[in-house]
Length: 124
Image 1 (spheres, rainbow, N blue to C red):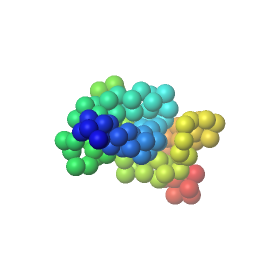
Image 2 (image 1 turned 120 degrees about the vertical axis):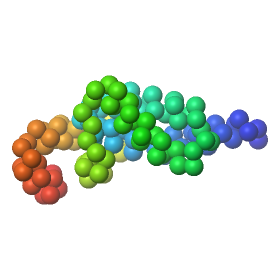
Image 3 (image 1 turned 135 degrees about the vertical axis):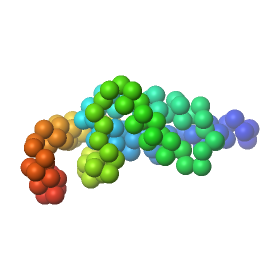
Image 4 (image 1 turned 45 degrees about the vertical axis):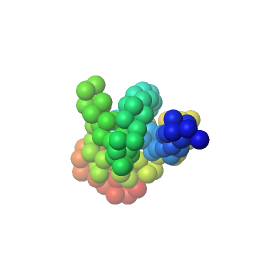
């Protein structure tokens, strides 16, 4: 097997493994599933360009996503603040479930801080 083909297969496996978790994280950070699709595409192109230079490309991937969102002026919450939200968003390609979760996350973010904390603690 040629080196180029091996690299392509490694990146393809990485892409398949990390595309949805990155998308869920960006949706949780921003509440915008369309922006998430754009960010994931751009980030994966950069990760592919630098493939093989990093031991943990998933760390680079998340860092690049946050940088891109910051450049675009999107409101980005910390990963730690959104970790529970990211885990509650269903995996897969969009659909009604994801849209409903995004709407709920957006509504929760609009609550006053104390109500938001109570809602988050209750598992909403």
